[in-house]
Amino acid sequence: MTQSTQQPSQQPSKQPSNQPERESAAIASVPTGLYAGGRWVSTERRLPVHDPSTGQVLTEVADASPREAAATLDAAAAAQPSWAATPPRERSEILARAHRIMVEESERLALIMTLEMGKPLAEARGEVAYAAEFFRWFAEEAVRIDGGYMTAPAGDSRFLVAREPVGPCLLITPWNFPLAMGTRKIGPALAAGCTSVIKPASHTPLSILALAEVLERAGVPDGVVNVVTTSRSNDVMTPLILDPRSRKLSFTGSTEVGKSLLELAAQTVMRTSMELGGNAPFLVFADADLDVAVEGAMAAKMRNIGQACTAANRILVQRPVAEEFTARLTRRMAELPLGRGVEDGVVVGPLINAGAVDKVTELVADAVGRGAEVRLGGERIEGPGHFYPATVLTGVPAEAELCSTEIFGPVAAISTFETEEEAVAIANDTPYGLVSYLFTTDLARGFRVSHALEAGMVGLNRGVVSNPAAPFGGVKESGVGREGGFHGIDEFLETKYISVGL
Image (cartoon, rainbow, N blue to C red; front, side, top):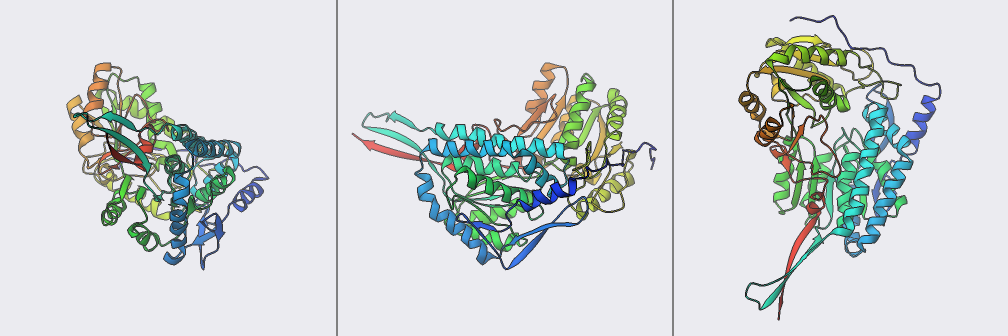
């Protein structure tokens, strides 16, 4: 193994003197009960929420049992008829109010997110803005749900096509984007006229609990949005999924868990949308603008400390520019300050837990053992919190585990290719197909490769593809369905055909 002496910055900035008070106030502002039927309910057990940058307990929230969680579905089912009958304009205005409240309280919501998840405060602010936009987008879509009317070919009847809410929805969100993944699901559900039960990840329940309180203030009626927090996800969610009153399941998380949920949902033929794992290739062709490509790589790799299903997992660079691209990327990665997300200037915060650090450490060790070279970082950081430094590996062989496993950490794994055909073949050699990135100044190549890549989304000379106005989702084992854009509300609507005799 060749170990570079270049290391990323590991000296965090000093905290402002009032920081502990601000943090305590933000955490204290979050309700911590089970939210069912417009009421905050205590549970027999409590679930501790930890700060991943220190390992300390921030607070405790409800840890629902299956019996306690059943009340959330009861409330959603009871509220469904009246919410479905609520005029679209009224649903739209509630979503618009929720958007305004989120914007007004963005600093509080961002701080809560940083404390429970670890991402730098600047990124958390960006996520709050992104999350709020889903409410604004679907506020506008709520009044544009359409249908159809046509004459039967024989002329003896008329066809009416109506769009109706699916019914009570179960929404399961991940820990890495705890607020945005909530609004991306709740927004279209509310716009379509569906009630919901949302279960946030046990690592990061506070953002969704804070969001429920925002929705309450925005005027969402009792029972329309309900929240269940629990450490016993399988025991709690299985009965809710199998309950025939539940008509839609939306999940964001690992492919392994998604497959299990699809099996459960099949037992009642429930509507599903699944945003699952990824293994994103990041292709840099020799004719690419390297300044643009490096910026794109920083965005695609380091967003959320690399803990994103859209993160560039395999960086593939055409051989003539591989060394220059690597040198530029390594310099940029080495400049990233590491520390608690609340500290000024920090870019690399902690990973979510100790298990995440162990996984990244093992993946890097496996790649190095198979011949990869460490150009930056590559060793875990000892001490409090769950930190791993920005890392660059080169010469990563295809058989390395990190080429087939989501790294979910700040590790840029670089390999080379010779031809366009080889690049596409390597990129598609995975069961996943969420997003792919490519960088080239050749317009024809850009379109050609974009269509050849087996992915639900492609970033062409862009390192970020997520946008509330665009359909987010993957192919192959990366999921089914789309979230966001004009397509997002379709996942929460049924099509009803009415034949009218003349």
